[in-house]
Length: 433
Image (cartoon, rainbow, N blue to C red; front, side, top):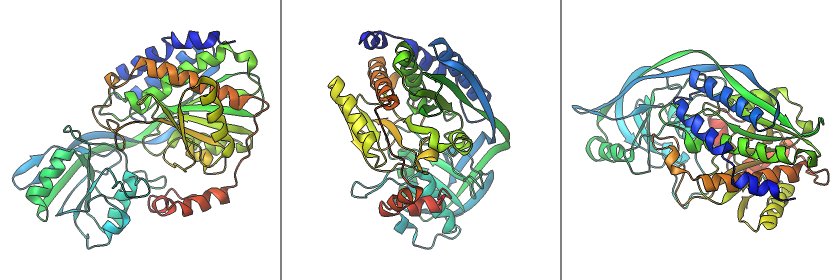
């Protein structure tokens, strides 16, 4: 039966929920807006037919933005604080470390205000996370950190610092636009500049959203996203769209619920943007042997073609290819490990997991983590198409004829070493082995 496809392609459930999320406003981890968005997601999942839709609370480190300033010469340059930056003022020589590759920090940076770009050169073989660059600067003795966007448009980037053990970072951290970064290099490189950050640090509460579909089996397939977003924008692409896809895919799966052989656990996390807190909290409580696979949507809908990180699980690559062939629709796959979204607290221990994104024609996050992450960048057509593909992928994984072997944590750790990812994870305190 294919009626569900036509119903999904004419459904407004996902897009309406996306509009609800972006209209909430600030969905920062631990905020009232995040609570409102989580409650709305619970209600949306119940409305499309999921069972036992409820919220689960957990504690997080709260951080609320105050003012921030970058003083250079007799000017004040536009900037924003990076979430979980400590409050404080630091003055030092402005030193640009370019892309912020590990080797770029092998110089005297003691007491400096260190600036690094948000991208990596095309020839470099892996992505460097913002926190890796920040903690390389901290280890080198920097007094403050400046994260310079590579995307034009006067868009200062955000993104958290801090670690699981120390949620608040070590030195003040700010983001500046490409244009401000270029101006700083031209006029004040080598001169003394001052970074000043004010932020409120407090205890806070975040929430995970749970609901289920299908039979009441011990084994389950997790379909996940995160509902929080940075406080400076609507968070449409990151990750309102991922949560909207979970709602739309849940509606499609509810229409064919009798066909599911395995429980589908719908799980929308809180506090992803400040260190994968919601997924780490859930992973610590869950029996990993009962998880057949996790399908995590974070970065979908931004481009029309799905891109799947399969984390070297051959069966997951085969599943994506099966769905692509069934619909005669392109799905890109890569076996690489990607330790930077909510699938990772499970995959790091060997649980089979997808990270679903979109193929785009831009480098890095694009509009993500800036004020330009707004609803107008997305298309309802793409949301519907990808929801159909993801619903069918989940159905395929839930089929009793689909078997997926877990990997050992040792094999995941070895691949991280081989792929040159281990060093960065160790620097930012994310190495669990």
